[in-house]
Image (cartoon, rainbow, N blue to C red; front, side, top):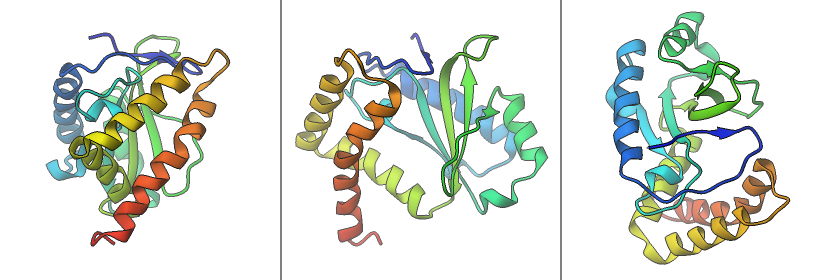
Length: 180
């Protein structure tokens, strides 16, 4: 398994079950270093969707009670297993990354710290679960991702922004169901 991408790189690789194995390995490290409960660390993103081509980066959501109350000890614990806090400005989310190289250019894993069972947590889990169950929408998303990744002038921000309407349409299904 070859994980990692440069900052503005957009590439998709075929699905591999090794992504799930890698997540389980990293989850154990996070749980051991932070003392969090097992249900607060989940595999998300395309690498968590069976048969979905993906950017070769493992996305992990970690649910905490209050991201604003996290102390230096928590971030030291995450650093001890290779995760560094990024300067990403997102409301109600802190992003950390693990790097493949000593120059911190090739990211292999992201951790998204969010409120446990809050809105963002539920959206991320729903998206993963929905696409693992609904083959038609999974194929739609797969085609979209592949078409976007083949564009010659696309960077990661454009790629993410162009997928946003699809993602929002699926999230709307969660909001209209019983999971409010």
